[in-house]
Length: 122
Picture 1 (cartoon, rainbow, N blue to C red):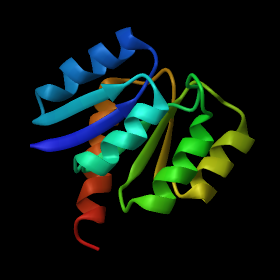
Picture 2 (picture 1 turned 180 degrees about the vertical axis):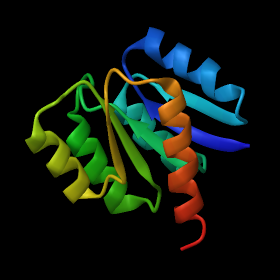
Picture 3 (picture 1 turned 120 degrees about the horizontal axis):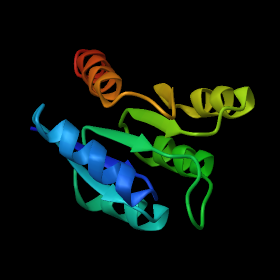
């Protein structure tokens, strides 16, 4: 089973994605609060992170920076922010992919598997 930590403050979207991905043997644990998510990464091993950029208490770009600094884990940014500067910055900070909202959950599932295929063979 693929284990994913998702940082998403939109609980409804998180629930939809969690239920959708479950059918592909992908277990998602959602965190609405970034500090809780960062703490959990020290306690549990995840295969990948799905990270929203607009989060309460801490900007997603800062969360990305913290994850890259302390963990060797792929990150997919899932964000409604469409500014090219955010996209470029996230990728320069170490995110592996940037998926602008809204998107079809099928695309997220395929991107997860593609990144993990590359990440697990490098």
